[in-house]
Length: 406
Image (cartoon, rainbow, N blue to C red; front, side, top):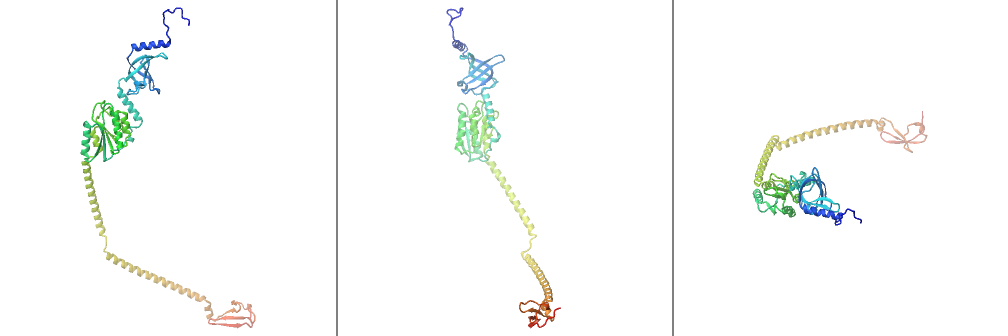
C-alpha cells in the first residue's frame, strides 16, 4: 500500500473499526453516566426483547437502546410521544459507527412510572372486558361460608369478624392470611384467592385491607391480583379501605366496598333484620288468612240464605216427577190413540180394496187348473178346459163347454 506523501513518518494509521472503538472508549470514559430528557419516537421491540427508539427535542435527536436486562424491571411500557427522563451512557455501535444512548433507567416526565403503569394496565384490562358490568355476578343472599383474604394483624380482620359474627353468629368463616403490602404481597393475594376457590367451601370471598397510602395499596393494583379475582368461581368483594383511590381490584371484583366493615355488611344480612322481616311476613300472612276466612264465612252465609231444606227440595222434585209422569202418560196415550185411528182407517181402506170384499158381493175368480192363471178374457178359454172358481166362501172345479167371446 502506497502512503500519501504528506503522511507523517510516525503517524498511526487506524482502521475504521479501531477508530470507532477509540471513539466508543473515549465517550464511555468521559460520559459514563448522563441524564437526558426527551420525547420517544420510532419505538420498537423486536423478539429479542430489547427496546430501540429515539429521544428527540425540538432541534435534535439521538438513537437509544434499552437492553432487555434493564427494561424487564421497567414498570411501564414506553410509547411514541411519551416524554421521559432517561439515565444511561453514551456509546457507539461500532459496526455502523452510529452514536447511541444506552439507557439503564427511565421514568415518565410529569407522571410517575407506577401511575403510568397503572393507567396502562387499566386500559389493557378494560379492553379485555374484565371491568364490564355484564360479567359481574350477584352476591348470594345468605352464604353458608365466607372466605376472607387479608392480613391477620390489623384493624381490617377485626372489623370483618366483628361485623360478620354480630350479623350472623353461626356463620362459617374461612380466613386465608396474606401480606397486603410490600414485596411479594400481590402474588400472595392472588394465590389466596385461588386457594379459597380450590377449597370450594366459601360462597363469597372478601379481599381487602384497611386504609393506607397509594403505595400501601399498590398490591391491589397488580395484574396478578386482578386476574385471580376475575378467574374466581365465586363472587368476590373488594374491600380496600380507601374511599378516594379506586384500585384495579375494585374494578375487577363483582362488588366494591369502601371499607372492610361495609364489605361484611354487604355479604351477609343482619340476623335481627331477618327475624324482623320474618315477623312482619308472619303477621301479614296471619292477617291475610284471617281475611280469607272472614270472606269465605260471609260468602257461605250469603249462599245459605238461598238454600232450602233437603226434604223440601225432595218434595218439590217428587211433585215435578209426578207432573212429568202424568204428562208422559197423557202424551203416550194420545199417540197410541192416534196410531190406532190411523191403523183403523188403513184397515178399512185395505178392506175396500181387498179381493175378498169383491167376492162377498157375488163375484168369483176363475183360474186355469193347469197353471193357476187367472182368466180375465173368455176368448182365452178352450172347450173342455178345466177351471177352478173361487167364491167368497169355498171353491168349485168346472169344465168349459162353450165360451162366448166378444
